[in-house]
Image (cartoon, rainbow, N blue to C red; front, side, top):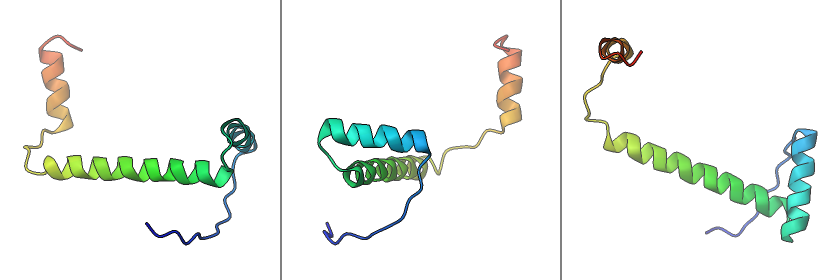
Amino acid sequence: MDTENKRATIYFDAELHRALRLKAAETARSVSALVNEAVRLSLAEDAEDLGAFADRVRERETPFEDVVTDLKRRGKL
C-alpha cells in the first residue's frame, strides 16, 4: 500500500462533523483515520457489488412489469 498521504478539503454537515470528532476522541483515532477507513470500506463494498454483477452478467433478465404481474397473479399484491 502506498503510504504517501494526500491532502483534501472535505466539508461535512456540522452535526456529522461533531459526531466524527467525538468518535475520534473516544477511539483515540484521528478524524483522518476514521474517514480513510470509511472510504476504504465503501470502496470495498463497491468492489464486492461489481463482482456480484459480473457473476450475474449471463443471467436472464426479467422485466419489472413481469415481476409485478406475477406477484399479482399469485396473490402477493
